[in-house]
Structures are given as structure tokens and as C-alpha cells.
Image (cartoon, rainbow over all chains, first blue to last red; front, side, top):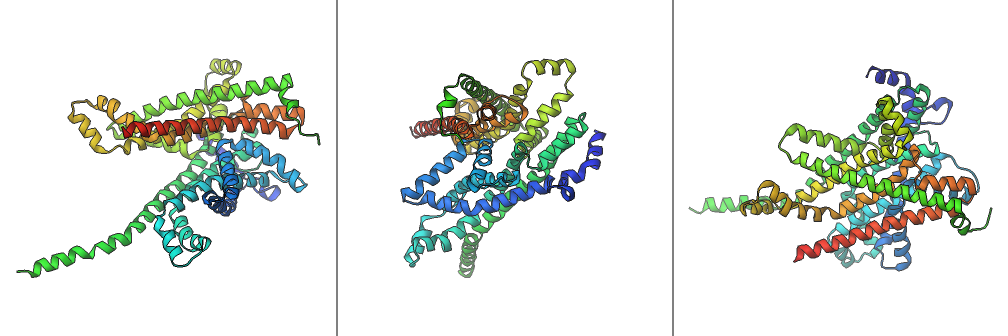
Length: 252
Length: 233
């Protein structure tokens, strides 16, 4: 049990930023940068994919649907292998493991987030779109100004939990030598050789702390958004009983 | 670069054998951990429903650990970490009898059990409370009400989520490659190393994975439709 603290004391910098000044940025910093960039770049892709999925034109609908099903049906590891092989072929030069992993995450998360966005759009009452069209907005204008702002706001908690999934998926970067947290832990394990349980236990605890706190934040956010959505309705109905009470009181 | 030729891999006896064994291993791991996960999920659900606070907290902690730690890290903790704590005799035996796949099944099963038990629990929670009261009023005991009235409805409600998580369990079986299990992804990397035909070998594996995942999804959709018909009656 004691050795856990010793390992942490000797290697905390490697776990935090990897071999940064002397090598690439790694450790938790790399994991977080990779997942933040991944989700940020995946987001616009997911909105486009969701709109394509909802579009009545087959030319848009079918490729987007196919991409979503491929991402849902093929292991992430397989997609990493594809990107690792195809991206250098397409752009004509080698790319780092970091870029490979980032491209994979954007594709994979883009497809998953697209389903979240689609569900968010479909969950809005139909009247929203009809009213916006009746006010003279075009379909795209209504989407941009009326539907998406509401849908995206309601989806914030799901997006946060998708971010947690992204953090968990960055661990696969270890397979293609991205110097993220899991890679750093394996480095430490290879140096020590005798304490694999302690090293991987530390690794699991670090991931747990990061992901658990984000999951809690997502739950809290969900509650606040639900309260906010229910709020105006409650405020609108609240004054009525008081009026009734007053008239009753005035009767005798 | 060589021309596109799928048959160079499919008809090569060595590569064909590797693919076949890889696919078999993937199925063994996916099926083994699915069965393990489902039985454990039922146990977890039962424990979660007991009135004991401590037992409930234990299940909550179990679920949130397995949902918040990456599956790959859980695999590594089992294969590199927990295996090193076992007595030497057991370690030696596991080393000889492909211990890596045993640990893959254990780790994937433990992880997925958390998701399955949550699916079952939310399925049970969406059964209206009147059902339990009505079943008790008709003279069922707690266990009888659970078995004949509540669980059948809960499982029906949980089917879509269970299917989604079964697909992700199947996909996660590829992670076993990182601890050296010779499953499909591992086999395909080997074939690619030997044949230098990355495109063809990845394509074959991708299609195999996709076919199986779609099969699970469609089977799930069919089950879901059947369940709706049963409720409508």
C-alpha cells in the first residue's frame, strides 16, 4: 500500500505532463488536450451529420446514415488502424500518433454525437419548426435560429457525458504510441517491473477521479436544465391560485 | 503499392486460418463475457434492491468504478496487476492455459455487468408502481411478483439499452488485443505485417465486425418489436 505513494512521489511529473520539456507533451495533459480537441472538432461535424440524417434527400441521408452505422458497428481500434493507414496515404506524408488519434476521435465521436444531436432535434415539439416556418424563416434559417439553439442547449448534459467517453477512448492511443496517460503508466511499469498492480491501480484511480467528477457535473447540469425548462411554466401557473384565494376571501 | 486483391488473403491457407481463429476467439470472448456480465448484472440488481444501505452503496460504487474507468485500463489492471498478486502456482497454470483470454473475459464481463445492471434497473423503474401493488394484491409474494409480473416488463423496457451495450461489449472485445489475445483485430494486424496488404486485411476484418454488430442490432430491433406486440395484447 505504501509503495503507491512512493510511485506517485517519484513519477507524478511523468503522469502529469509526460517527458514534456525533453519530449512530446504527454500524461494527463495529453489525454485532456486530445479529448477536448477531439470533442470540439467532432461537434461541427456531428451537427452537419445530424442535419444530413434528418434530411429528406437520399444523397445526404444515406452516406450520413452509413457513417453512423459503421462507427456504431466497428471497434474503435479498427478505425484507428484505418486512419493510421489511410491518412498518410491521403496527405502524402507521415503523421504523428497524436494526429492519428485526433482524426479517429473526430470521426468516431462525430458519428456518436450526431445521434445525440439528432435525438435532441427530434425531441423538440414539432410546433417549433412549424411556427418558425410560419414566421417566414427558411428551413435552414429556422434550424439555425430556432431549433438548434434550443436542441443544443438541452443536449449539454449528453455532450458532457460524450466528453467523458472521449476521455476513456483516448486510452486506445496507447496502442499507436500516443504518449497519453495510459502510455505514461506503462512506461512507469516497464521501469519498475515489480509493481504492476500498484501502477495500474494508480492509473485507474486517476481516470476515475477525472471521469467521475465530470459525470457528476453532467448530472448536476441535467438537473439545472430540467429545472430551467420547467421553470417558466411553473411561474406562469403560480399566480392563478392566489387570485382564486383572493376572490374566495372577498366573497362574504 | 500492390493492386487491390482480396483473394490474396482469403485464399491463402495460412491467412485464412488466422482469420478463422481470430474470429472464433472474438466470438468466444464476446459470448463468454456477455454471459458472465448478464449473470453478474442480475446479482447486482438483486443486491441493489435489498433494503440494506451498505449493500446498495457497494453496488453504486461498483457501477461507478466500472463506468468511469476506461475498459482498456480495467483490462490492464487485471492482466498485468491482479494476475501478479495471484499465487505462483495459479499464475503458472494461467500462463500455460492462455490466461490472457481468461482475464479478458473476466475484465470485460465485470465492466459490462455494471452497464447491464443499470439498464435492468432503469427498466424496472419504468414499470408503473401500480403493477407491483396489483401483483401483491392478487396474492403474489415479493419473489413471485418480481418473477411473473415485474421482471418480464422490466426486461422488455430494457431491451434497447441492453442491445446497445451488447454491441459495445462485442466491439470492446477487440481491446483484448492490447493484452495479447489472438482475436480478430490481432490476427488482422499479423496478416498485415506478413502480407503488406493493409487495405485488404482491414477491409475483411471491418466487414466481419460490421456484419456481427448489425446482426446484433437487427436481432435487438426484432426483439423490441416482438416485445411491443406482447405488451399491446
